[in-house]
Amino acid sequence: MAAEDTPPQQSAKVTGGTFSGVTVVGQGNEVSTGSVNEGSPELDDLRGLVQELIDELSDEEPADARRAVAHDRAEQLSEELAEPAPEPKRVRKSWERLAPALEVIKLGLDVPRIADLVTRLF
Image (cartoon, rainbow, N blue to C red; front, top):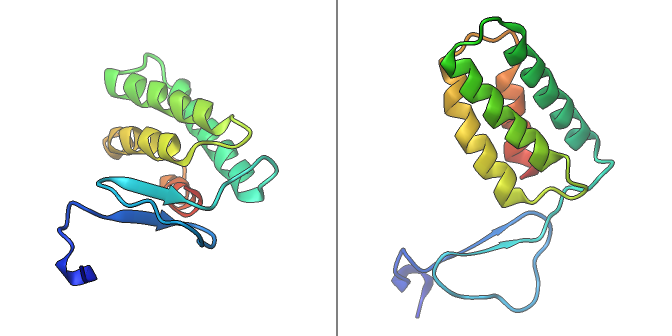
């Protein structure tokens, strides 16, 4: 079957690094060949920015409900990033939950930089 004949629901997503070898075919399959490990300068930057975000979300008293939700989600992202080799899918999922919460809160932090690092690394 030619690629253009493949139904859209059957696809494989390959990201990062170089891929060679057997391709696993099936609905919803993903292959990640890159990894972000301890000691990566960009990972360290991302961890620092997320900690700054947590600190900024903690600064305001009393915290409103939106800030509290964003704070909890930022802590979840921080926990994922604390792993020696963070799992890309879990990091992306944590960011996808956090990003909308940040859109309605005024912050002095560079949120687009966090988004860029999450996108490039994971």
